[in-house]
Image (cartoon, rainbow, N blue to C red; front, side):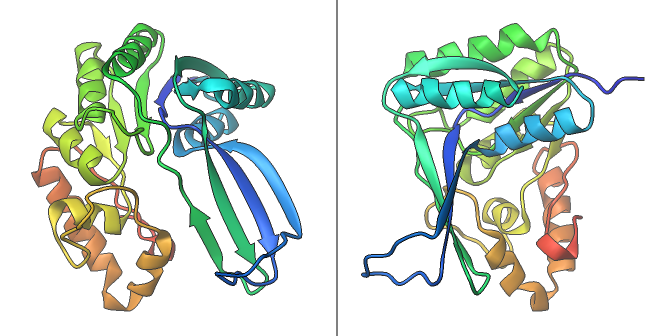
Length: 252
């Protein structure tokens, strides 16, 4: 039959600016050779993937300010269904800098700070849409000002509605989500170890996603065994299932 409709909680949308240049030299004035501007964020990528696989998807995201409205129009022009939750500030942007030698640098902004009322409005939008969808996926970072247990709260809403919940996050957002026994968590190995311990911990910041480069660098250090240990630890910490990605080594 048809795959179930997917409700995607991707609160922290962004505008991706993917730019190429010969070499990134800090302290210099540089000119990009080409730039591609697209809406982005992990949650949007989940909605794109669901659609590519033939599943209906609805993305719920904050749309801060004028740039938020512009980002929302760009998403809708792609044919992705979006339920936008307005808030103050302006939409963040992400710079992806690709050098000729193959190195890529990603500069992530945190997004504008939201107020308590904003998060409540976001939760209400997710709650309202849950009944019409078969699964909830909470994906990516949450904006500053979000509650620590932001995805934990959403996971509980899904459980109350009898819907499975998948959480893809790192730092405190992942740690607090484990308390709500989500059906599946799917961090990368570095994000997982920040939360459950292992070579990458403890994290001083407790925030943000670890980059795949860190995973590649540690491939020699038995990354497969680390990913398996981290997946087991996430389940022991409360998740019903865990998929820990380890770049080219695959997933445990």
